[in-house]
Length: 203
Figure 1 (spheres, rainbow, N blue to C red):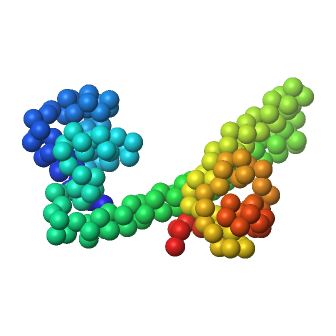
Figure 2: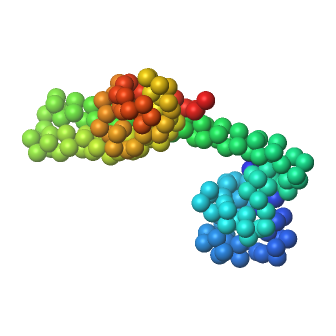
Figure 3: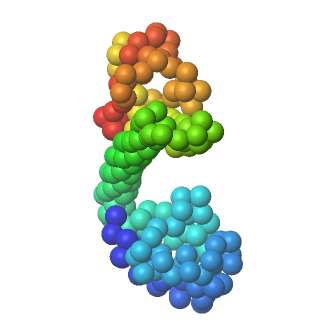
């Protein structure tokens, strides 16, 4: 999606409706700075307010994502392109999240091992040794729910039995055995338990 083009289109439609950035922001319960960012192509409206935004601007979601008023002649083509772009954007975001998970996992493991090593071999009072060990566990404890949420929502899991791709529940990811990004879970389609591997796209 061309954010700059979409931003200019939002600004154009807003002016056609005789609205200032502040007035549009108040109708959507966002800040005028958020509207300014949309119109400058620095960010996109959140999906939760996209329908309301289109209603106010008297355009369709397809118009918004295309950055122009879509005619009936090219409606289907624009719709398909917007859907493809939305899928690509989700895949890009999912890859970014999985890379972020790896980085944070590496950093929290280094902090944990470093503090445990210092607490084990450095000459210090016992109370300080205990404090260092507890501090070493803190990054790991904070990281685990964050990592599991990413594992649950980024991409899909593919069943080894029926090849069904799906997003599991947080609970099933949390309690499943795993090796890397492959987890032993029950498939919601075939109801069989097997090792389900992480995949980015659903095709």
